[in-house]
Image (cartoon, rainbow, N blue to C red; front, side, top):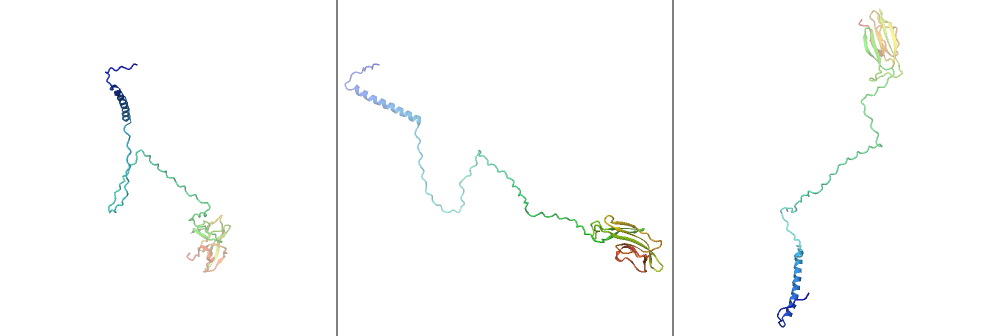
Length: 231
């Protein structure tokens, strides 16, 4: 492209210096425009905060007033996860020792069984009624003087008839042995038509055939009797 011709009238020494000034001015303007564009886009650089001066601690005089706590409790964040409650665990029961002392025997309120007694006691369980008397050896375990195993107790009854001298002669008698298989005996005494003495006896006493006046036989072996004095 051909450069336009300058129609400006030739002025001696004026056209050449003007061209030399316009070219540098145009370049400077272009550089300033680019700089302003960069500043407009990026903005001013942030300033760094100045470091604060730390004041030296000063001791305060003691005060009689109660200091008001300056700390304000901060509420817990609603998004905080609550702590899980620990589940209580049951403590295991202590194991029982098998090597300790032997267990105590249970106390019983039952009365110990009475021991037996040789020639044990025979009781009259039914007194004389219309010639009938019932006796029994002790085998129930509730009383003392129990009948011993394998033991036999001699028991008898005897009735007498009165004589004119005030004595008596044997009328009837019967002997039986009591043991554990047959501990009782229901006697049926046979008495004379007239009033006379009778006796129920246990033990080995003999049965006399006659009785002297005023004599009561069998001593402490008698269990049940009647002398006939009130007939």
